[in-house]
Image (cartoon, rainbow, N blue to C red):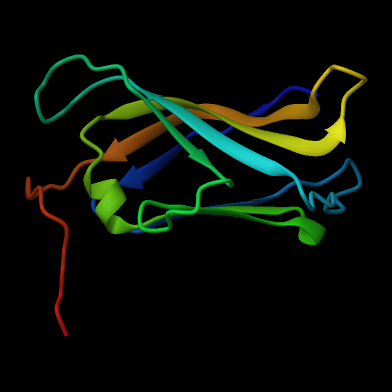
Length: 142
């Protein structure tokens, strides 16, 4: 089965959530307990410097530094959730990126063949810049 194409936008300087449920052909969630996921994106343009820029950013469920992002799996429900805090999206100084979202099971594909890996999604992420031109993240101290 080919990866689905899904394009989406992230507003710079805002909190972002991407959630999806991996389902079989009968619309039942697939149990992905003990699997891992990775979203890899390659940026294409730096709107701050106005220069062409190519950089790769990787978000993985193996990350433990939740100050940067949180990517987790609810295995029995087949659910993946990627959370990007506003400080992280505020640092996005590009206009768009191509991405791939992959899943890897804890099962071996075949002897000496590594774990079973699939690509779920691919597409383009568009970064919506602020109309005000502000470059600082909102930080209300209570």
